[in-house]
Amino acid sequence: MNYYRVGCFNRGGRSCKGQMKIQQMAFVLMAIFIFFAIVGLFYFSVSTGSFRSDVEKIREQEAIESVRKISGTPEFAWTVYDCAACIDFDKILVLKEKASYKDFWKGVPYLKIERVYPRYESEECSRGVYPECNSITIIDSGRNTITHSSFVALCRYDSGNGFDRCELGKVIMGFETVE
Amino acid sequence: MMFFKRGQEEIVGFVLIVVLVSVALLVFLGISLRQDSSLNTSDSADVYHFLESSMEFSTDCAVIFTSDFSTLGELFRNCYEGKKCLDSEKMACDVLEENMEDVLESAWLIGEDRPDKGYKFESFYKSSEEDPAGPGEEDDVIIEFEKGDCTGGSVRGASYVSPAGTGGRIQSVLEICS
Image 1 (cartoon, rainbow over the protein chains, first blue to last red):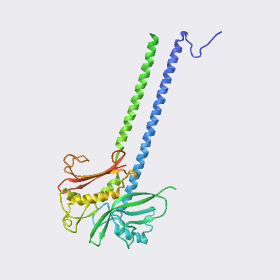
Image 2 (image 1 turned 180 degrees about the horizontal axis):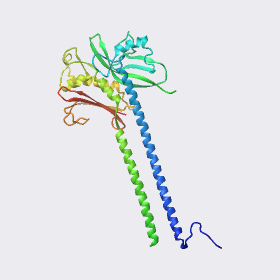
Image 3 (image 1 turned 90 degrees about the vertical axis):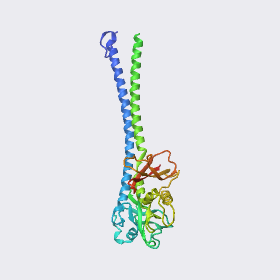
């Protein structure tokens, strides 16, 4: 009876051993390659995760900056002296009542100016309680929004004392969310 | 003898692989740790806007003449120069401390069950331009506050620089710990 070894043709099985070694080597190389590929994938997923949080941070900062930008517009700006952080609280109260400004900020679903310090008892400002009130809501469309806020100085003319007074406030702006 | 030689070869190969893998892991660990430490403290536009706006806050302290009330930003300078308020005879530093503390407490709600766990505020006079961001040995601290827990977690902050009369500058640094 004749037996044949598949793949080994030389005498003494020398070539067979060589082939085995080559196979071993190939398997080890493949294992190393797969291992490094898995490590690479893991590293890639971790770094991509941090990219995502970085992007979220940058988006938030951009939203805050765009909220802040509104304080520089002529409708809000305090023009008595040069102050980038100041907005005119008197002007905003008048602006709220002006019917012509109702559709002025079309893309903005929510816009509110809030006093942070000092705080008073009355929440929403009207001519009756002003300036001892905490907020002026300019736009409230009632739509689903995500809000961002930025600190500003709320400046007004203090008629009782006859000088300008600035207090700490916030501009709160709503951005539409996907329903 | 041949058996031992073959075994030694295998062991050397195995050790080589282990060394290679551990070097790769160390490199990966090093990179990820370096990234984490750089992310720990970040500049915040929100904190900067707070500092910028609070510097415009009007106080009840007039230093030069009675109806010219100083802003918080001006009070830092007046406090450093050791001036007094004209109407109340209070020191500018006392009024500054009272107002700054109230403004900070109203703006940043701190607590264990809140997103912000604590804050650190420091204001100091810097005499020259080449100083690093923090207070140096020659810098005079004007006021400093600390509230809540600022030992762990991430920190966001900003610094605001305003000119001081004597050629130097006053730097205010606020760090919010989350």
